[in-house]
Amino acid sequence: MPVDTLTLVRQAEPDLPLRDLDRVALTAAAVTDDGDRIEAGRQGTIVGVWREGAAYEVEFADPPGALATVEAGHLRLVEHGPA
View (tube, rainbow, N blue to C red):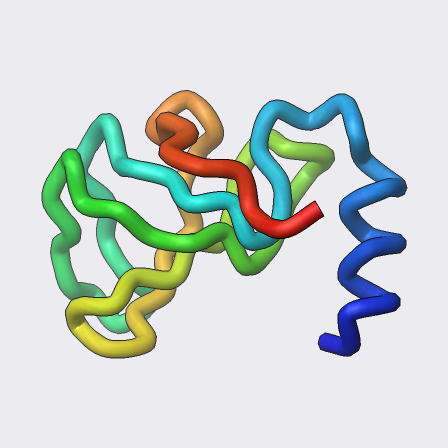
């Protein structure tokens, strides 16, 4: 996604507590799209926002490229991504 597009996406939803490219930690275990279990406490990066912040697509480094859709209540902000 081009940086200009990313900036527009982030500006369009400024009131969400979590946004694209924020670093987050799981507060509960999650299952990746491939069926792998990711334990609570693991960190990842938000790569998608679903249902106006009700859930987020999170990418994890291990296993490489692992994606999981996680409910907002099961995530804790670690660090905001680039503005």
